[in-house]
Amino acid sequence: MIVHSMDRFARSLKDLVTEVDKLVKRGIAIQFVKENITFTAQSTPMDNLMLQLMGAFAQFEREIILERQKEGIKLASSQGKYKGRVHKLKPDQAEALRQDWKEGKYPSKMALGQAFGISRQAVYRYLKAGK
Image 1 (cartoon, one colour):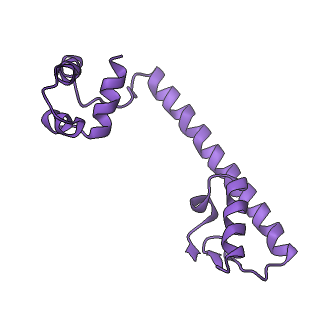
Image 2: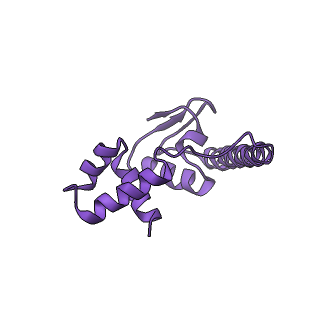
């Protein structure tokens, strides 16, 4: 199996070690292109150490990126530049959607979503928000 990088394969060191171990036990070799490391059933203790170290650095890098992203969003919000996700339906449309569902105007949530131009998942969110 060829994977671009460890941080794309798993989000934490624990997950990385677990998943690599599962694949290796099944006889599947896994190659990480970015790190230039390959793991097979014949992995040495040094290979396992490298997996732990590189995985720890990948997890650290990911956490730093997320922290910076949160700081950027907070700063942009305080300056009025970031307002969050734009809702597809206006409040009155969302209320109409909930009312139509209560009245049974549509046979399914899929049909309701199609009528309002939103996905089925969005229908669930709007119905849940109205409770």
